[in-house]
Each structure stands twice: as C-alpha cells, then as structure tokens.
Image (tube, rainbow, N blue to C red):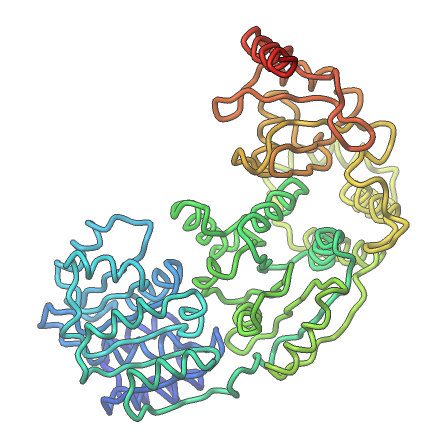
Length: 561
C-alpha cells in the first residue's frame, strides 16, 4: 500500500511527499483509513518509532474544518519536547492546507504568547496536561467544541502522575467526541482511562502488548557498582561512531555523567528538568542535527526525543518500572532499523534483567566489556576510514606539498602510516595497555585518593547543597587558575564539601589562585586533603577574618562559662 491509496486530501499528500513519505508503516496503514472514514474511538498499541504521530495526525488534519476558528482537535502529550515535536510534524503534514492553525501549549514558555496563538484561530492544540489545565482555569482556552482528542504516550503520562489532569481535561470535552489513545504498553491504569472515557473502541495492536521491538539487540554488562562510569567509557570507546542516549534515574546523576563525559573529551550533553527550556531546546537541536553524539537524559526529559537513526541506548541504571525500559529501548531501532539497548547492572540489581525478559518477552545477552585491545582496534579502524573519506584542499596544499614531501621522503609508506596512526592513538594505546579492566579488584586503590605520588588531593567546602555540580566545580577551578580542564583529575562531590585532584607541582598555585575567591557571592576554603581523604588542618587558602575570629573566641568563652 502507498499513501496515495489512502483517502487523504491531495494537499496533505503533497506535504507528506515532500517529507519522503511513500509507504505507510503498519500502524499508519491500520489506522489512517479507519479514522478518516468512521468517527469512532480507537486504542493504538505500538512501540515508539513506529509512526504513531502520522497515524493520528493525518486523520485529524483531514477532518478539521478550516472555515471554523474553534478548537476542534486536541492532542495531549507528556512532555514539552514531545509537544513541540508533534506540533512541528503536524505543521509539516499540513504545509499545503491553507488557514489551518496549530497552537503548541507547554510549561516553561510564555502563557500569554500561547493564549494569543489560540485566539488567532487555532483549530488544533497540542499540549502538555499541566499547562493546558492552567490555561483552562484562567479561561484562556476553551475545549468544549473539540471533536477529536488524542492521548499520546498515555502510559507515560500516567506514570508521570498526570491522571488527575487528564480526567479534568476530558471532563471539559464533549461526550460525543472521538478519543484516540496511543500507547507503547497497556498497563491497568491505561485500560482504566480507556474504560472511563471511550465507547466500544477499535483496538489496533502492532506486534504484541507489552513487548519490545524485534530489531533491538538487548545486552547487559555485570560490573562492580563503582565501575559503572568506566563501563560507559569502554562502551563508547568501542563504538566510536555511536549516536546514542544514556539514561539515568535522577537529574543529579544525569548532570554528573554528562559533566564527566565532557571533561573526558566525549561529545555529550545533559537533558533533564533542572535545565532551562532554552538549554533543553539547544541540546535537542544539536542532537537532532547530529552535531551532538551522546545525550545523557532522564526518562521524563527524553519523552520528546523523536529522532531516527539512534544506534544505541545505554541504561546507566535500570529504570524503576519495567514499562520505562520499553520506552527507553524504543528510542533505537526505529522505522525497521536495528539498534542496541545496553544495561549496566551490578550484582544487587541483576535479578531485574530476568523480570524485564519475562514481562516484555525479550532475551538479554550477557557480555564481557570490550578489552583494551578490542577498543583500540575499533578506534584505529574508524580513524583509517576517516583518513579515507577526508576532503583534500588541493589548492592550499599545492604550495606546501613539495617541502613536506621532501621532509618525509626518507620514510616508506608503511612507516608513514604507522606514524599517522601513532600521532592519534599513542595516548589511547597507552591508557588501555595500563588498564587492568573494569571491575577488577586489582584496579582498586584508596577511595578517592590520588593514586600516585605525583598528584595531590584538595578539599573545598562547597558541595551539592551550595548548588555545585562537577561541571561547576571544574569551571570554578579552571576560571580562577587559568589551567585547562585536562589538568584536573578526579572530582568527588558530596552535600557539604568536595575533593579534586591536581598535579602536586601545582599545589602552591592552586592554593594561591583560589585564595579569597567567592562562589555565588560566598567565601569558600580550599585545602590540601589529608591521606585518609579528610580535610587537612593548617592548609586553608586564607586566614579567618577578624569577624570570624571574634565569633570563634565568643564561642570558646561561652563554653568555659
């Protein structure tokens, strides 16, 4: 079947043809004709990446009366990123439908601007539940004449605690509307919504309920708890062309892992709820444009990632609920392509692998992390391919080639290849030759302490409670010392204090440059840490002020009394 075989407006067909749409996916083939020809409720169960947006978007656009300025179509999605993605897709589908207006409503943006979009005659609204409820309470939007309502990613919306908002929204819509519910899984909570607000719905299931995509290779690596980050590095190094997602449970872990990866030279960025909307949009834009290779995200923030060609999904920790694993892994292997979903597990949570296998009917392969030799082989092959594909600027090189050729004429072709490879890979080869392997007890030294006599460990009385994260600590050190980030070693952050490592020869400079400085308008102390990892007395970067000395003296007097 082709899209031209479906009962679609020629102007819609023109718009989707520009997008390269020729053949509908199974979920599109099963739903589009049904929804256009018959007004009825529908439950669509299909994995992420199977084309659900077009499955409900094209019928909705087809059935909208552009002569009316009332809101006729409503799409509710769990996150702002997904809202924006759906809205952009709708606008692309309806590019050649004159006078069709689409409003996008989500938190973190101007409510007045969004209200103006609606007043200008939006026939379709794409919204997050929370912001839509806020605007309904303020009477900025009316949905009492909606004909078609879509609940997209319904299972995820309920997981995020939006049930009350969804109930409130649906109660303000007409009883005779059509409700189209789309979900990757069908837990009891979604079934309850369907029973409450839908009448004799047509159910379309692509694949099987609660099952993972067939083109995904599921892998897990069993590592020591403290070696998770080193395991991630090995995975990334073994897949130098990776275009992937790393999922973390919390915002703090997400930021920490992204900061570490950036510091270690990887092309990565975080995506979580503590970032501003502008920061999140910028990260998503870079990721979609593939100028960003790795996105480190929380489950909630990643709900809007509708991106093709993601090669790998890495679970830094397994999610708390099994359905979330389905959503995570569904980010890869989209549109019939293959992908890998990798889980990093410690002994205490390895039992959850069996639970996931049983629930979503998949099979994990238990693999050993790539060895240093295997990683170097992959990196060198990638570099050789890069050399093969490089564009040569003949005009500019023509002036330099005679002298270069003269300088290198004594080397054979084999020698030149070895030298080119060595320039790029000596450091990598050296690193993995010295590496004892992730998870090996032999690799353990003193916790957090500099592992040789050439490095010093420093204490600073700033931590998470002062709003500091690893990226912030790195910037604090480098901006005040004018040292490159590469000169900073291991960073360990706690609630009220932190530690960082530097070369011992820089100790005097570090103490001096960080003396009498402030962070966020407040003084801080930097000292050389003692070898038990605690704060070392007598190494403060500054003496207490007279005011502080007086306070301490007063405390001593009170104690004596």
